[in-house]
Amino acid sequence: MKITKAVIPAAGLGTRVLPATKSMPKEMLPIVDKPAIQYIVEEAVQSGITDILIIANRGKGLIEDHFDRAPELEQKLTGSADKQAILEEVISISRLANIYFVRQKETKGLGHAVSCARSFVGQEPFAVLYGDDVIIGDDPACGQLIRAYEEFGKGVLGVKQVSPEAITKYSSLKVDPIRGPYFHCTDMIEKPSPDQILSLYSVLGRCVLTPEIFDILDRTPPGAAGEIQLTDAMRSLARSSGMIAVDFSGTRYDMGNKLGILQATVEVALQHPQVGDDFRRYLKQLAQNL
Ligand code: UTP
Image (cartoon, rainbow, N blue to C red; front, top):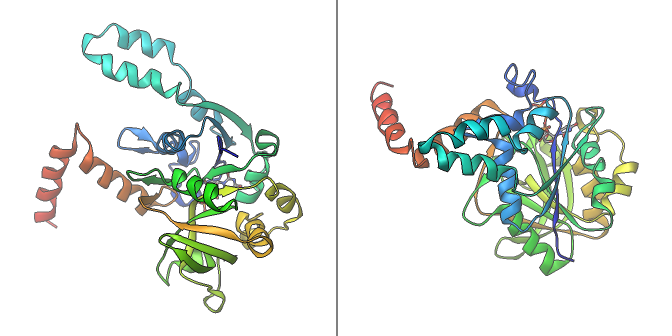
């Protein structure tokens, strides 16, 4: 079955980026001139997704407004001869996909957020793109996972290796190589203690799930940090039917922590057609004085 639906959980409290996220979702933090969530929606659309459900809570209005038309702004830009390109860009954001919203009424974890997508998803496989993980590359990461689903017919995890020091803050997967970037995954654990590490491969920001995940999520008790963890539900799936892990290509930026936001800003700014050259010169100058 062709995958056309995606879910973007964006209802976390973003406590690692306070106070910026006190009243604004971290998913709206900009990388140069675009909010993180727009990069994610664009990746989904480039991967063949037509319908997107954003799980939000406070600050929902900001995200909703960003993907809506903005008549006053558009009228103002229409009147300026030199603003036609940005006018078209502003309008095109509202046409990217069919975007729906649902509120996660209590912040009970990523697994709980995904379970809010049950009626949107119905009986189809669907992609999940974590709202604070921006992945930039020539081949959209979500599309790489969808191709793996089409080949293997199982749930798919977007993975990367992380450092031994970092793995205890992420998930750790039991994997066996298939070929190239593809692995079988038969077990996983969220935030492992050093003696529980299964490998340095961790789920980073993308997966493709089958609708059976919803019944599993309903039975999943709170785990690490007292939250309903998506990893715990996916572990049941991995242990019973197996999942496929894809070591995706592309650079992943964690917009949920301060260093990740700075890395994304600097790297995207260096490639930016309007400010890239000036910014490179500025950085070189700055580096001489460090
Ligand atoms: P994180 O665990 O990184 O988000 O969740 P957080 O809870 O905001 O992080 P802290 O407070 O800085 O530690 C990964 C993704 O899942 C969403 C987040 O918005 C983020 O995009 N999420 C998390 C939800 O939608 N609901 C939740 O209850 C928790």
